[in-house]
Length: 154
Ligand SMILES: [Cu+2]
Image (cartoon, rainbow, N blue to C red):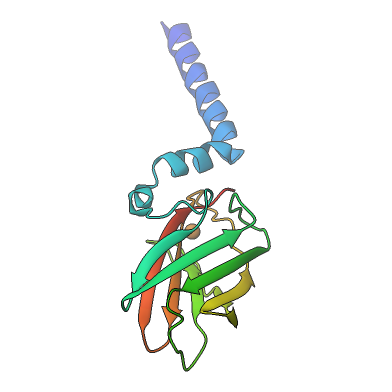
């Protein structure tokens, strides 16, 4: 009786140790966090496949991020096209962040390359939670902001 109890306790300790080992390595929480990321339903854009479009102040706004697939901790080029090339007092910019999480300020400054096309470089960091849903908020001063929500490869 006593011996059996001890064996069960030992089994619990071993299982607990195994679990700690698996979770401690990091890949299980990251995987689980990705699967359980409720913000994935907000994704409105597949930047891995190509351009994404939104409407801002009656203008079509096209976002392109290269190289693809869009990967964290990589030097990325962000290109925003404003169809109709609306006049802007100041250049547009992009705020990179995650829905539901404060990731600190990460702003991409864009420069005009002509005909309503603006370009800049930036880096998307790897979220420690393992969640991969990111948001690029494109702000056009004097016109407004529109959000592109997309998956990032880690
Ligand atoms: Cu995060």
